[in-house]
Image (tube, rainbow over all chains, first blue to last red; front, side):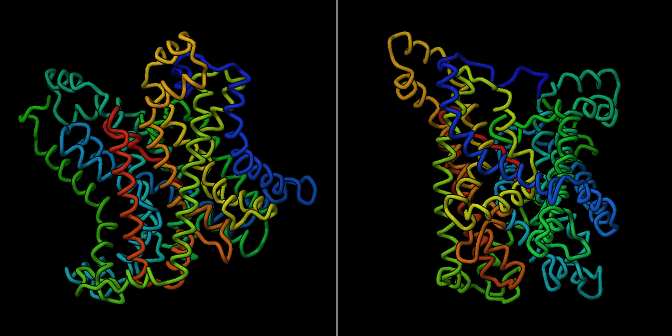
Length: 289
Length: 276
């Protein structure tokens, strides 16, 4: 974000520093109460209860149960990112070539799910994947399987539903990047004798790299902390980080340990943001790009 | 411009695949709608008949109604508070000489970067101590913080789209900063303000993760109630609730589209990272 001129920099300057601070005060108060103070208190729990200690953090990495959950969270997140990219790239590429009504319809197809409640989308998968649900009906009807299968509470179901929920986050930045590539490049490559695949491999793909990175990092980040979908679609065998934290808090009241898990998650997220801050355009996910 | 001759077999296959993905995005939610009108206790597609039973179950159940009205109240209040607070800080960022601006910029994007589960757990810890769980104030504060990035980015975008010279002209003609804002700037950025308010509404109304933790036994948001029912007693009533919820979202999106039409095709067409 630092590399380009900040969006906050444009425009004239009407208000004095004192007036500006006054305008920003309500914002500061809300963020203090519902963001900074809570996160600060939680991290304090993880480091200073009962007195300064890294014991809670050591536990996260020492006990095999928790290591397994972390490893599974990373594995599922990586898989979801890969699937989202493989499904999202062709869609974004076609959207970049489409104009008019068709483009609007495709945009609706991407934006509508994005704005539909995550609970509604998760519930939809629950209904589709249940033992006597649509997917099992289809599979038995087509003779692919003899009897309805256990689909819910499997890692496959969690990955499928999460990919579905997160797919728009990779399509949108990819679409923005692909759309900005001038057609001339591909045409020039064709004139020089490149076939369709060569154009993709040597022109389009490298030029769309920023969109790929941005979308993938975003999906991976969101997947790491995902709560609703894995909690409802998966069972104990598919437990991810967020559900582990929830259990520690609501069932065991172990705040310091929950704080330590969140601390690890925050470090991972912060690290990714620092490494990729040049390519992630948050304004592409938020408001108008 | 694309030429017909470029439509190779490879591209045709890629296009077919892309259409498939677009349909995959829509299908699960779209199937819920007809299923919610079906009489089957285990939701079936296609439904074996037509009934409004699940809708009447929804609208006659005290718990569902309480949760719905609680969420509506929170969402309306969040939408108002977040828009006012967000508009003020946006003005300070764009039009003011704000000391410590980079810190404010970081704070604006903070709630999108930090995973919702982290914010939720942390908020629960602090709100429990402050007796804010299950309260309107607690929910509105938490949802306002969460909506802040979307509101601020939307308003910033409309502030940038409009010519700041108009405001300077008003000021040099003797208007006070407040007058210049009310009579010159505000009418120009109104479409952005309206879509920001609608985003804040949807974000609050749909918000499942923080609501999950800061609800209490008597004050549950609609998403929290849905979460419980999905987990413990899946009934077709949920399909009716899901359909109503989706309908409301579509309505708000369409309203936002028309509100922002004056200046741009679709205001803030992009969503947010609501990481849940």
